Amino acid sequence: MILKDLLEKVNIVKAEADMDIEIHGISFDTRSLKAGELFVAIRGIESDGHDYIQEAVEKGAVCVICEQPPDIATPYILVENARKALALTSAKWFGEPAQKLKMIGVTGTNGKTTVTSLIKNVLEKCTGGTVGLIGTNAVMIGNKELPAERTTPESYEIQQLLAEMVSAGCEYVVMEVSSHALCLDRVHGIEFEVGVYTNLSQDHLDFHGTMENYAKAKALLFTISKAAAINLDDEYAQIMIDSATCPVMTYAIDNGDADLVAKSIRLHAEKVDFCALMIGHLHRAELNIPGMISVYNALSAMSAALLLGFDIESISMIMKTCGGVKGRAEIVPVPRDFTVMIDYAHTPDALKNIIKTVRGFAKGRVVTLFGCGGDRDREKRPLMGKIAAELSDFVIVTSDNPRTEEPGEIIEDILAGIEGKKPPRRVIENRREAIHWALENTQPGDVIILAGKGHETYQIIGKDKTHFDEREVVAEYFIGNP
Image 1 (cartoon, rainbow, N blue to C red):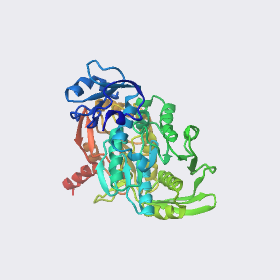
Image 2 (tube, rainbow, N blue to C red):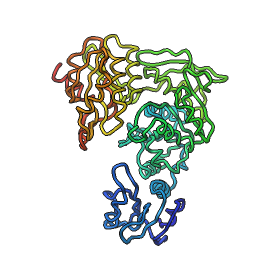
Image 3 (spheres, helix red, strand yellow):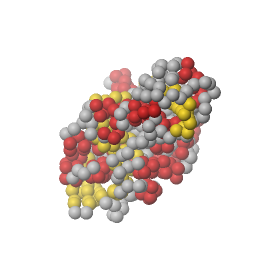
């Protein structure tokens, strides 16, 4: 493809390049760059692509897109925003795949993975077709699963995945859209058929600074959507509604003014059921995932499907066949008279939700084992400690992904929120040892919540990512202790 065609939608400040030059690919990472490609210098959180322009040219980049003139002699295109340029050129390179798909974006702090999975299931069963999914757990094209490195990939990777989904015959793609992705223009140029908002609780303040900024970042989704489904019970709902440039459908449990309301809710150990009420319709709905948060997740998915034109009768029937996803209230089989549950809860609100869910069916003690990630929002650590202490019968504080922070210092931040609380606690820094200790000291009827890792099968210590699957850690305990 020639350069001028690739740059068709890009806002160019200055062009110091032959616009008819042939481009053989696009790269934003010199480690994978090949000769003949266009190099886009984007500014990241930890590094700046402008520092790698010389390396890109030495590797054979034929042109550079950048926000400041390069220090070396090379053809370049100057732009105001290289991230937007990467998104637009990537879309052009892959044949504008998003325009051939009906995109559904889900944003919020908690529930995104479950909601996207529910929407995918509903759409597949309503249409009989192949539905794509881009999310935290995995990327899926129908039943084909690909690994996912982060909630929302970089824009080039997104466009590449969307092109694969078009080739596979997908009509719909459901996507988790993180606040980082919205702020960093990873979804720039994509118009969503429906945008869904689940909730907002403290997370990522190391990046956004304040909850208001975090909310405004999430709200960007509703400026690029044709319709919005918003949780009216959430305290930040009005920011989402005010920001929306599209029609809004609301859902709620507590707020009767919502367009879709859950009534007569019944919580069970293995599922929830409720009456879904909207003007002119009342249908009994059921979801095979426990906890009040599951009612909200069901309402999110139902609202999205309704906005896409499907009828509530079909949606309700399909919802009854849907189950949970890996790492979300996931029960791990054990050969003893107690329960082990793995959950991704890594925010204060998510931790509160999962402990309250377990409280609803636990016959014995609720034992919560958790840590907090390093190089991330420190303010949430004592909050999570406080929640665990107030709602659990026993608390085990350990490591999560400490990254470049000292695990002991992270634990001290957590313990600051536990001081003065009644439940007994134990601190075991090594997560494998902590899990084994919990299993060794559990009583009949107890429920152990392993919170924070969820679907992750690794642990990041320093800058090293090592294999760590909590399911395997539980299984290895029972091999040595039959």
